[in-house]
Length: 381
Image (cartoon, rainbow, N blue to C red):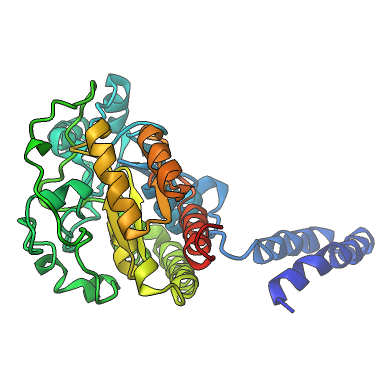
């Protein structure tokens, strides 16, 4: 039997007996104090330690995206008040903070970056708005970024696997990130050059270029890399608020254990997936680090940040059929039309996969379970 669950079930009976004792005791005040302390000990497992009310929100922290808020709250609990610059549904590639957000940074003690594109354009202004007392903590520091994963259209650039991104070379040290060996560049064999790839005039309106100079920034979708970031978050919080260092360290250790358990769970989900069924499609290539952690292969549908045109869609459908693609990730920040067309034509399953979900752990678990179910079931079901 799971001990915490059993203890939780027994709690109402124990509290009822204890309440009777309190009513009849001359030391009622002391007993009530004991009851208060006991209730804290019986808090749900996995919940960050709760600081006394007088110490709440000891640190004002600003971050770029919602998953960072989750990480910080797992370590700081009520000791940090977290402000997120990129709101739900917004694109961290192109987001422009509002004047009110910039003014609010004046009270921030920490700003934690994670390497998303909008930071490159705004970090100097964010730092200036925060004032001389705001420390900038770079959570991406020390992480070797992977090159952007291959697009279907990248097949046109190189027939022999020597794509200019240096994809394979960038994975030499992948074991530092907890990545599996044996991940090959996701591109179809025997690619045929299509000269009108660059000139077919199919650009969609509202095109935003999403190339990532310096590598793929989506590091938060790997539990192994989140463990690295958790250490940086703990260190920054301890430095900013040494009074509560013990709380931050204890919560950090508990969070790391949860990350290890999640990593083992996801590894188990994909353990029996055949090698020839480990490739999946996405619109925007946000899941590279997740794929590398679990020996999967990501192929992007987008063409330089925009939805593919008719001729490009035809090529993608042909590729998906040839490679027997069974799973296609779609996310709320981008249109689903192209992915739906491809799924209909190849019989693939669409999987909702939001890389910016605030409930990070539940989201990663749900995406992994949905994908593993799709890749392990009999084709066509």
